[in-house]
Image (tube, rainbow, N blue to C red; front, side, top):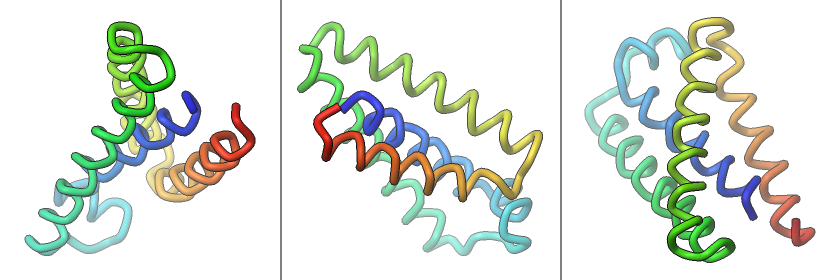
Length: 109
């Protein structure tokens, strides 16, 4: 569950970054529409809530929130460094993390 929660945190941070015109333009060569920006921000909020709920469900409230905030920080650093180093890798890396996280959650890890 923790790997799946990290995948959700990464995808949330990626959605927040892509809601910004600068990063969206760097990845997709076009600026996001205002509707897409709202959708990305709302999706990021849901993903962050999901990651926090998964962590608190698996580790308890106190430790789960600490793990969730740590994952959020690490996901933000990962997205930021990937955007600075290889901008085109952020979306495939997010898809890969999502698949690995889902497989881990299904297998019970």
